[in-house]
Length: 446
Image 1 (spheres, rainbow, N blue to C red):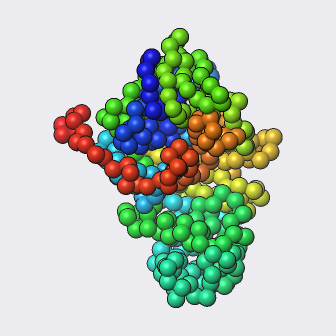
Image 2 (cartoon, rainbow, N blue to C red):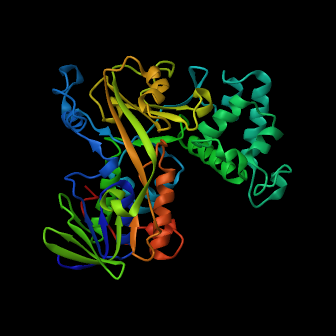
Image 3 (cartoon, rainbow, N blue to C red):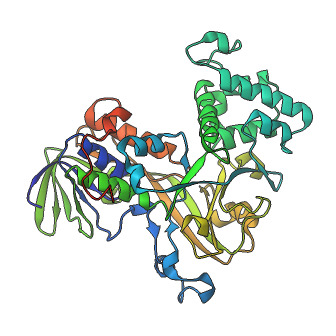
């Protein structure tokens, strides 16, 4: 402990583990500590099932019909990976993919007027979708074709639209798309949580829809991937990367205080010893005086003995309930995975509903999602505060990650990682910087 490090990382959430891995690959001396005895922090996967019951203070132990407790790996924060997204790039460039196996999520669905429909994301699917009438389908097909062909560097492909000035609402109007189509395009394809994007320049939305389409093109069923054995595998993969490059890991370490001199971090005290450092990365729980609450998220983990209705018996899926459909300001999400992903006992499914809290009755807010899941064998409800750092950390050199939001993909988490990286190093995040520089000698050829 009594050593000098370039970077100390507190907490083993995904954001912290990825940054720890990147810093180690870049030649920094890293010490990574967590007060918990397990990896993942807020984004851990809980196993066995008995531990989940304890965590949520459920009386008794799981009933026998739930199968063996150790067959369960239950994510606390539900997320999928976009097949062509930033996290997959990080996994590929660092070669952390070699420690993980992924499965494609079977389908993506959207909620309309109390029912769920498959999200049409190709021109061919758009023409057969029951979400739209015949004329609407043609207009939507034209819109998708425009998005696919639109090149930022070639104004000839813009069809008279100024990508940096024309709002997304104006683009929808140009293609004469109706409200329902706007709803599922913005929320199920571009994956916005609210409608604020409608008044913003259209370029980012077009990029987001293209990311969805390109991710979908990778594997065909849906644009999403999920790691076997749960999301807890992701931080562990990056922790292994850091260890290969000399990073030191310590779980179960109580953090007594951050040592600050002249307003700047110089070390961390644990069990009477001080490890010195130049920079610190941590999650909000380690520095409650340096973060501000930016909202709340409700998540309901539901154990089911059946696939969700109207999903063609999918063993995994995502359902998005656009806010307009349920008179809300933000969307409701459902992520469903199952025994097919080695996270549940045979024949069992885990569906996790989540949304941003808007009222004093969060459970009522999430009811439209739970109604889609009935009958539910067991549910575990949590309402968590979301935090963001109060400053950029450039003076104190304390860099704090943001709490995981209700979105069902990791794109916002990756944005946070890139932002912290830029503040720490002063240079733009570059995926090339993450490339491995030495052969992994720790059992990779086994």
